[in-house]
Image (tube, rainbow, N blue to C red; front, top):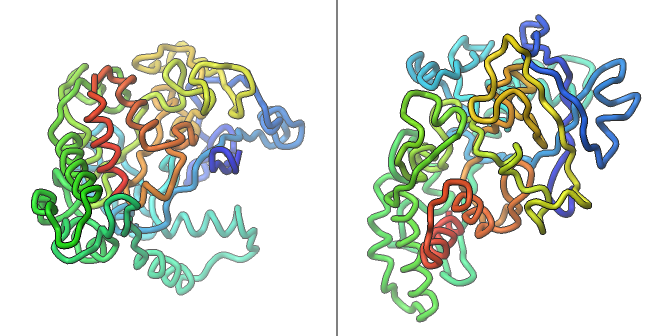
Length: 377
């Protein structure tokens, strides 16, 4: 699991226990259909143990560029997508909730406290001073791609203003149709550059075209919970940047958990080599059955098969099954495999997934250009 997919086991209490300590009454039941690792059916650590635990397997999220991930949002944004954001218990402010794959931590401070208990198993609570130092340290780490095997340096003078970790440090968080301020107009001026080879010139031209595919190439987004269920239509004609709208890192400015099908069947890839094979699969499979009085999953109904219930393991809501918080786009070339379950081995696999999922019909050239654009971020 670790070597093939870059996954870490995450054990979550079931039913979920909210931060206020009052147990949540789930809207669904969970049945273990397949358990390759044995964790979910284990008599001590499994779902039917004395301390019921659901084990899912997820990619660690990048611990950098966190000022674009952990921030306060206004009350309007906190409710605009019908996914009311949690408040930071330290400030009382609504938070972006983009830190964890299931949005279970509203702020870096609460995440540090949880990690100290779960991972470090400390006996005493972290002091306010220790929390401040942890958050201050985390908030000054920036990461982005700086070099391309084909395209050369990505941080040379006169290059695109949105690239490189130093630009992340300088820019402000905000909504935009780009990853930087100003716009990537300098992509057009990237060709020719002094001393560049023909291979660099061709690659940089491809990146510039890929930028336009990401921001300007429309397609129909359909049957996606928390995107097509918030009053904007199903399908709706948009671009990649509609959901990946956060300046500089490409997450969602509001609570960004959505179900595009990366963990729910029938869209989820079962194995890296074969999208549909049930043989030799590494991930567990759960059967979710929604209660008769609960709102069902909008597009999959009341019985759902999933490798990871995602946000639903925290909220207890049937409609949230399979919804995962979108990850940031910086340093992608160094962070394969992709998606929360590591099901896309390469950036091209990631692009191919979306092309299949939404019947986009990318040309071979568009796929190559979009892959190259993602690889320089």
